[in-house]
Image: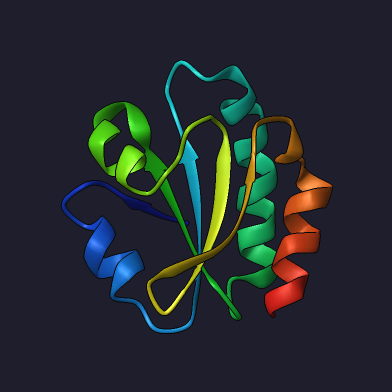
Length: 105
């Protein structure tokens, strides 16, 4: 899983071709930390069909706001640089994330 930041987000996500899943998380977000191992498992399972990235929003607050990330955790899927789907807060469960991935792979 690729760790992106405000310097690399545009190149790795917005300029990427195809599907990119971004896990928006924060260091002080306990649900985010609990979810991360599940997202990493999904990255191993579907990584050949979709790019997986994670962004720590505590060091990229403006970028998160610009991407309309209003709560954590947020799992978003981009296609060719456009956000096409997302799950936020209590909807961001491992099962829901996998269902969302399956819609696009």
